[in-house]
Length: 334
Image (cartoon, rainbow, N blue to C red; front, side):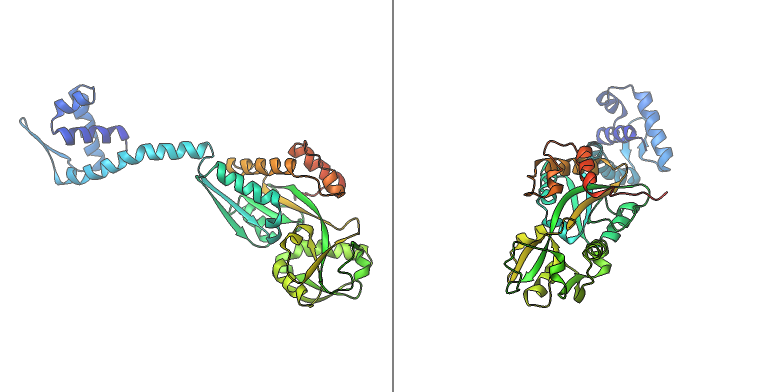
């Protein structure tokens, strides 16, 4: 329906006089009469009763007038909404994440700054398993997937950008024989019982740990499996076993748990942002906030991964610096 015809109809309905309505609209009367007739033909109803002396609304015209006013009020709102959406000022950003992603200041600060900069954008956060997040991004149910380690080759059409790398630590009961050590080699944990994440939730992280144990010549026993790192720490605290965690988890100061860095050089983990290869505007803007945080975060001690990411690197340069240490993190299926 032509919005201008609604405007013409409202003018005639309010003036109940084609001449005055034409003057109000700065047009001549014949074109106005023609537009009203075209509107009536389009609707299939008569809106006005006309004779040589008067014009009045029909019941259909009275009913239509109310909604015509509502439509005209919505038009500028719709135009502004479209403008905001085109500029990325409104809409939705859906972020799917694994539990440990929310222990990174880089991620938390990026989300907070993005929400502050674009208050009209609804940022939807959803926690879950890495494999499901990748499928969500692929199917369009999520815009960004924050996952620790990649669960395998990515489907075509997706990209993985490294967000942060960190050392791994061992979580021990506070009275454990190694709880006061500065660093622990994996081989020192031979014979220990481990609290591990269930494969359905932590498969990619577990696969990375399996490679570490294999390199150290170990085959650790598992005392129990959990669905999350915080529940694993609770079990560690009561002596059920020990658990390998990303270093940032140590900031929780969990009761009755000591955290000791693992000395093996390959004991490190990487958080990735999974997006479409050609991300939408909201996603691209969020990635730029992540990029800014990666550049501003201070290197963590003598961590070679952090040392390989100078603060003044651009996102592509940071990605390449990480890959020099870790090898190509992304493979695309053909």
